[in-house]
Length: 57
Length: 489
Image (cartoon, rainbow over all chains, first blue to last red; front, side):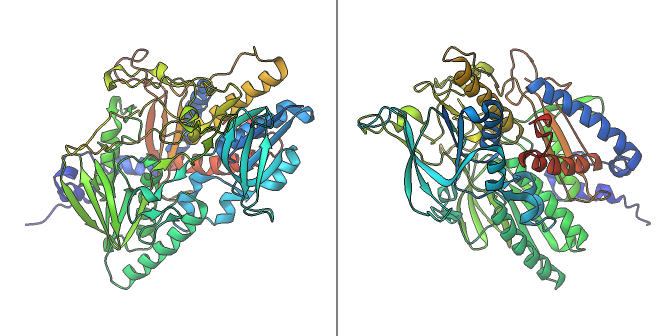
């Protein structure tokens, strides 16, 4: 029987604790290092942080 | 001319001293007493601990910066405070003992009009047998709490990597070294930086990695956890953290009080009262924090340490220290001005102030051993508190005793936290988080205790870029380079 191995799902089988978590799939992982998306997130995170800093002073 | 003495040259002390010197000008005197000759951007010690930065990149000499700012600098540790002076004088003073400047071991009484205690913590390695002793870090584990510790940690890490390259499996155990530790975030960041470095070195499959912590759930971080908006859901940081650990194949052990460390082995007690052992080849365990052990004496020489300081050695301020059950804790228990209630010309900033209680839900093992994180007061809150205290002291000097004191309650301020997992611009990822407010306010924000519009977390390269920027920006600011006041704390 041919196995269908999905790399990001292997850690679910390490133990019961990990089996009950959520692990990001291929798309979610790729977005973390997608330069265009991360540049957008960089701008958004900075704006949010500036607001938090502003509210804290 | 008034003299402001600031004890400590870390984030809180440096912020207080530099703003006070700027606002007071040359008409008044600001003196910093700190045992260290260098300023250290502590968040980047993590990168030193994995060999991605050198000690020189995260530190700089304080003396030339203070000379430029017109701030007096004494490389010494404070030993005791006489807030009423002594029998020969009514002038309050601090007794210091030099640790450098060619005067090591000499003592001196430094008079003050206003005192700001920003000593930071004593790294209390001695609290856990084997973790260290009164002289500091022990021989079995490493630390990233100081730049020197981080250099040592990287030396040991490289030895482990070499062993793995030769085919020898290694067990990494990272976390907290006592049931009452804080700063889980630093250990959290370190374990994922190690994991990233092991992947880069091509030896991840030779490493077993485990997290050990006094948190009652992953993602507590000493703040009782947080809820954040992710993918349209409001989720607990527990899910966020557990997902990260599972994704990277890092096992975890929580609710653990490490009660003994030996060569290659820690002994621990869990919340259910059970005892256990964990072997390791490489271990970084954060020590618990305590006050630096300052004493206080009144005019007749009587010991008033218990009046000025809480039992844990941190200075009492305008918090509500009345013991009460968790259900009755309120945001308003937390201090606003950081003024000592007994001596109005004394303030505490940063880690040096005594919190009214912890933030996380208090937990004890069935044997009665307290196992819960203590409140984090580092980084952004330290800087904001330091600046507010500087403002208050300057107003008291310039406008008189009736001046309004500036406020910076941790129940009304947020914090930004970026935990890297690697250092590259294109590789590795970081968890960028903000929390608002640091201390949850369930009266204002029923449900999560925090404003979920401003409490968020996500993982990605953007966090790396922000961490890089923060590193250079805050060192630039701390060196008092042009425009430094425009950079927020």
